[in-house]
Length: 134
Image (cartoon, rainbow, N blue to C red):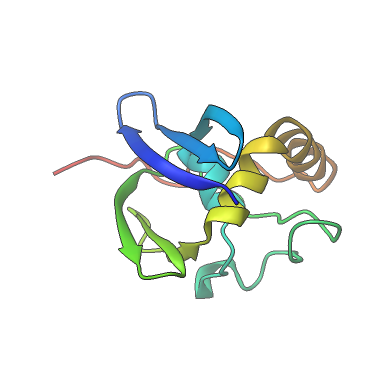
């Protein structure tokens, strides 16, 4: 079973580094963009309800637009369930360790499928409004 040994938030590059360790496997490090984590959130917020979406994997790719500039503000442990990620667009979701590892190991394929789906549906990743930090 995989276990997360460290999270490293990098707001300047809008990325999260995750270090995993598991039984008989060497430590693995991955880097995911905040946008990718937000788009592939395991929970859909009310603002995402209108977007075409399915549960990952094996179903329709989520089409959550306008998240290119989203920031991951906080990560909170949630008992045995995983970690609550809090984004600056008010979205919160609990990511389990197996789900995070799956997102990491399938990142290239999932991201390309997402980009293709966005293009074919004429949607954009760009933010609707300019976001400034106060």
